[in-house]
Amino acid sequence: MTTRPPITLSIAGTDPSGGAGIHADLKTFTARKTMGTTVITALVAQNTHGVSRVYPIDVDFVADQFESVLGDLPVDATKSGMLGSRDLVELVVDRAAEGRLGFYTVDPVMIATSGHRLLETDAVDAVRTHLLPVADLITPNLPEAALLISDDEPEAQTTEAMRDQARRLLERGPGAVLLKGGHGSDDEVIDILATA
Image (cartoon, rainbow, N blue to C red):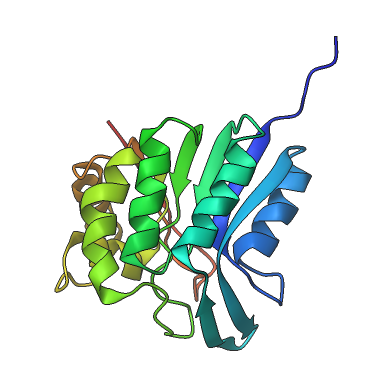
């Protein structure tokens, strides 16, 4: 009997430089010996210096991509990244609620390292109230964690503040929170994992 490799799905935007989004996820999936599949949410013009332009994909075409993958393959695990709009957030929430995404990790891509906003303002509340509760794991960085808590939450500056924010995000319903300490300017970067 032949066993199939685990099937993984990335829901994200592109990155022509290969350092993020669909491109980086597929490299990771291959390194972990899984069969990687994709649903592309945006075409992004970016490189190692930053994002210069984002071209959103029509929500109906994103839905068609979902049906192409999920109608054919049993997905074991999914990671979503850049969703961009409220409509795309709601589409992903619907697919997660159907139980078709396997173990679901949300990387709430909201703001690029260069400062370019990657999530429309009206979509932030949909991520907070609808997407987080359907996630098995969320992986926000420090600015994303603050924004997911509230519009005026300051970015955590200490390990204790990170712990507090991770706990508060856990209360919004995900199975676990991995709060990423950032790219780091020192020799040490601290991540916080909060579980029930």
